[in-house]
Length: 79
Length: 187
Image (cartoon, rainbow over all chains, first blue to last red; front, side):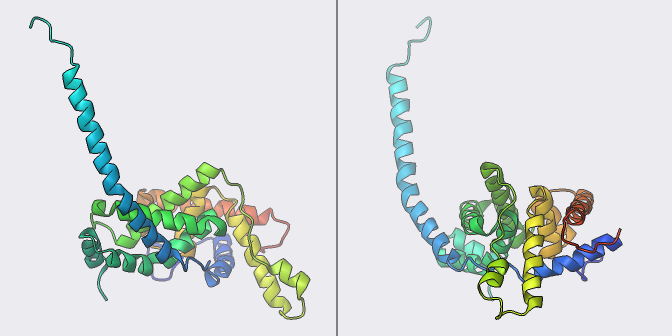
């Protein structure tokens, strides 16, 4: 329904009527999110701060599990 | 003005200020789309969630479509999953037309009150549509995205976008026709 889009094919009379009504919404877009930049960046900082320690804990846990697996691995048949 | 691609590159190198500029640049459309899909009460949370997801997936952005398109795809998916999680019915519209009329009928001209009431009713009807149709109408008829961009946002073939948009409009027209309020829509 934008004039610059040639792919917009013909609208029925009802669709044209709807488009006129929708102008009410286009004219008054929802406003808000003024704090969005602050909250997003705060969230990114916080997630970054906890991500590295969590990755480290995960790596240590995996290494411990692998080590225990090797220690308590049942002997192979025929050895 | 630095391009989105330049800012993305810097953000990927750890420059948080560059990502901040991307948020600032696109926050209005992200908020509008979120608000129109999930309603004003959850719009801020959905927008924030969408930007955080975008940040963590920034290395997956391939640049085949515009950054805005990619971001709207994330926003749309976040909004729809919020709706399915909360199983939200029609959202109450917070327009205060009726309150204004009750508390201070003299200050606003009747035409303005009527306009706001129509707007509130229309928003409510829009939110009664199934979420997939609502997204399409928001992206095309309210935000004015091209069919190609919508096709990228929704990851849907162009023909399907057009077909579904047609059905979405038909459904909204029917909803309005069945409303007691007279929308004067021709057959």
